[in-house]
Image 1 (cartoon, rainbow, N blue to C red):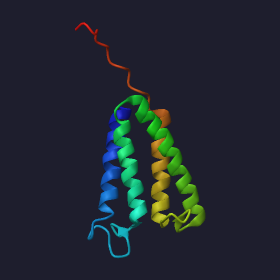
Image 2 (cartoon, rainbow, N blue to C red; image 1 turned 45 degrees about the vertical axis):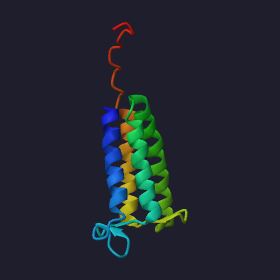
Image 3 (cartoon, rainbow, N blue to C red; image 1 turned 90 degrees about the horizontal axis):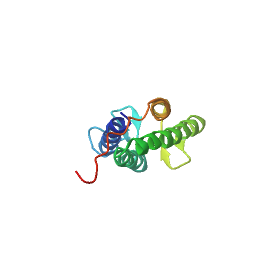
Image 4 (cartoon, rainbow, N blue to C red; image 1 turned 60 degrees about the horizontal axis):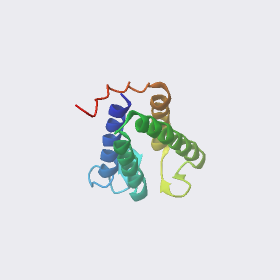
Length: 129
């Protein structure tokens, strides 16, 4: 299950990161869907998060580690975002919609990383078969 969730999160993060560069989906004020503040670095972070999730989807152990690490990172980004209100450490711009989305993502991702059990390993085949 963790591998599947990691694959889904990877595809969604990649899509969001790429859509942040698409005119029409992002308006001239760098607002994705007219709601979320985005920019080049913010989009790159989403793309890298997505690539990491896709790589982690290769095993239950890696997927679990991904969710635990990235959930913690998104929790930190959320805290910094609520404190600084319109930026994350001056690296990229955010708005309140981003902060609430990051909070929801942090809770969901940490929940997956710590509450979803790893799928049992399948039966191993003998090297002679």
